Image 1 (spheres, rainbow, N blue to C red):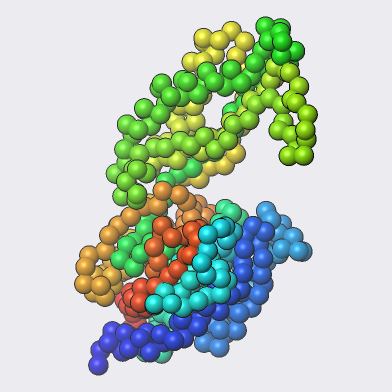
Image 2 (cartoon, rainbow, N blue to C red):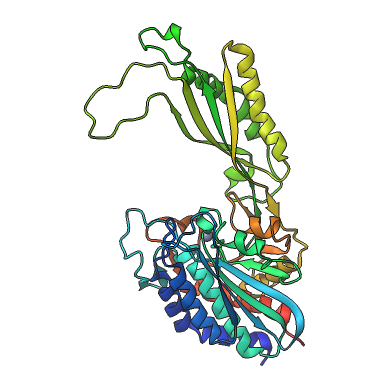
Length: 427
Ligand SMILES: [Zn+2]
């Protein structure tokens, strides 16, 4: 029997184990924020992987945003050395899940198995992917104990809140340096036949317009910051949004609407603060002297971040030319550069072939509209040979009644196992 056939059998034989593992992970409620139970899930993974001969390390991201004694940011990195020198394949999964929200018909932390699907918060995003990668590694170790190189599996904190207490911290400490790790697979729920090469860029900024406070009955004695912001929004509608819609990318971004530059106005606030619900009085009549808007600009690999910023500054200068008292500030809140792994990169080639061989159809290449932990591996770790590949349907992430299909997890575990064979097995 060929190595591939033995691997397929080893994965299929672990079906019950995969279900139990996924359920166990879902039943540890690792809500973020605030960052609950990170130590518990890392200790669970530690027991599991140490029993398979992995050297494990629990790393707390001391001083990272969100890290406190009440909510410590724990991560686990497990490494299994092969019998010979070779390259290292790293599977990175985030252990945190987002809030539950309303509308569930199952227990969000129950891990209920029904009609071949396991339900729960984090089932697809991404405890199912984490479980599939563990099963893939264990099946590979059974059929190929004398491999070359190393396998690493990490469970990391805070992906949903930026990854600074997780992958970013580990990357700063050298865990993703190219002399330690050569291939990275992030089992995010992109579907079992799709390879995610990267993501668009992010530029968040706060625009503030200034005015002058005065009595609301005599607005001519003041200067209304909200009207100034209204002029900014009108100019955005006239010249910015149409220009963004014209910018199309060659990146294979899904869904289709995200193949262009986008800008969301996340919030706008001007004037008197809203009163508490139990306040029964009326507001006071004042001309607002400040208005703030937070914008979320997502940009393409073909765009330069300085040009992205300059576009917004040009809008403000245009408005300033028309309005005598217009004054403003722009504060950058957050930036992430776009990243896209080359299709010729070894990890892409190997996983694409494994998908074609396992599923009997060609892999589809996609790019994510939003960012994920690849940004830190790329920028801090300087590692370009990185993709997201894992089971589950992206549209279910963060929704009520989130689930992951057991057969989908098994198929993607076979793809991951075959990829390990291609990269680490000696013939
Ligand atoms: Zn995720």
